[in-house]
Length: 94
Image (cartoon, rainbow, N blue to C red; front, side, top):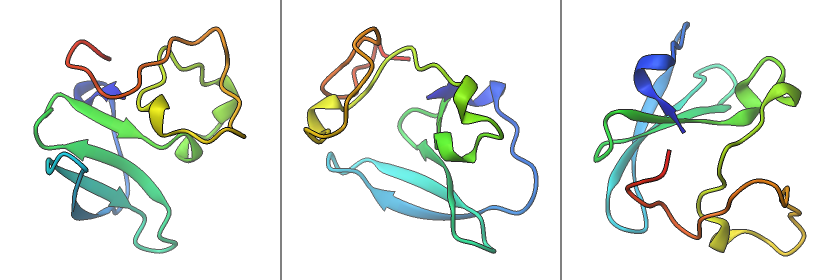
């Protein structure tokens, strides 16, 4: 998650509206040519945007500051033990 004001997306993006488990609406942006997901913009948190790590030019330089929704992870997904984990989204999260 990033502050929307800190993110700039160039090129054509298509969006669809999706409902989260909570019923909240989020806008999912994706590439209209290949269908790759780019971002999620939660309507109830208009200052934030979630960027898919796979869209970064060099994802190896990305270091998360927190893992959200870790309660939904898979046993085979080994998360960095140094990164704080939250089971769900909390209003105090980044």
